[in-house]
Length: 131
DNA sequence: CGACTGACGCGGA
DNA sequence: ATCCGCGCCAGTC
Image 1 (cartoon, rainbow, N blue to C red):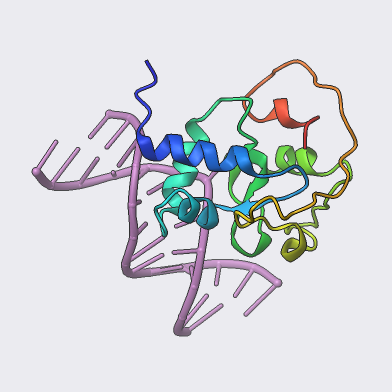
Image 2 (cartoon, chains in turn red, orange, blue):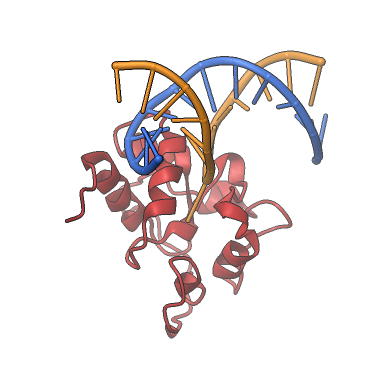
């Protein structure tokens, strides 16, 4: 099963490495996955991915934009909203600060309030309580 | 194999 | 700041 291409797998692994309270852009993820410029392809992988260990909500657009999310923007905001880092009307607040570019664990994520998980409703909503 | 699609990125108007 | 178009790459038809 999982006829997942190596590229996709690499992307998933990268996204999994994004520390709580941090975000990475599609472009960065693509680069970290070894395919600079494949930001769009990353989006494709994300959309298709349904794994709970892949914090897709931490992947944002360039410059701190939220990104498409297939219209589930409010959902994404909810995922990141609670506290940790903040989401402005249409942009991640302090994007430069919470941006994660693959830094070798040199990013002390701002204390993240532990949250209980809820039932898995969909690939995205399940992160609503995880940040 | 070719064409279309899209959770993207960037420069220009 | 907003809108538009082109280029990008992998996935799907």
